[in-house]
Image (cartoon, rainbow, N blue to C red; front, top):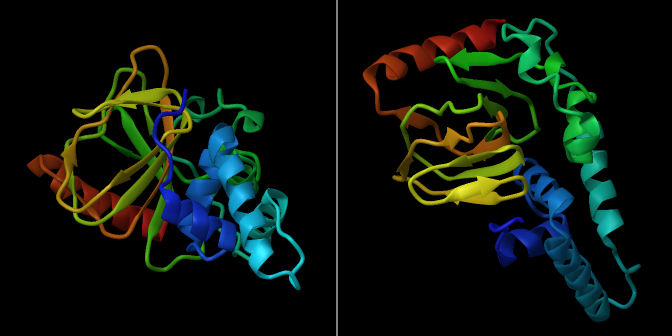
Length: 226
């Protein structure tokens, strides 16, 4: 059961179509799993229509269609040269993932350019038409972890498959987790299943381990030149 939800600001801005593309994608991904928040979006758009009786009432479908139209306008920059074993994501059915994400990835996570940091953590950045934020998918192998890191800005994470834990709680599919500047944590995937997440952040994360601090800039340069 989903425990963590977008706050009222995220929901209302999504209903109004005013969220940045990266954050709108995260809210849309959460709605794929959460009927409670879907209903809130419907209620907000219906409420808005009472104040603007000359405007055609909106619905959740119109908000979603607007998001899909924005995705259609994105440049296609898929990279077939993946350096992570295809088994990493091939067990994820497109039908189990949010439609907006499937549209961006052309229904194939394996078409993305995956990069590895350490033994258990892999990520793939993609262009979401938001120059102020980095958006990516990341995968933690079962029982593995993301290296301990500190956030230098705000990050939204939506769990898409599997689950992970940190020092604060346990997070499952659909959970919408917001981290702010200065927070430190080490996400650890459950022992029985890989964990796949969608993430967007407005400032880099900083690895606390010196080895990963040296490695991460190299990985980023490699990704940019691939």
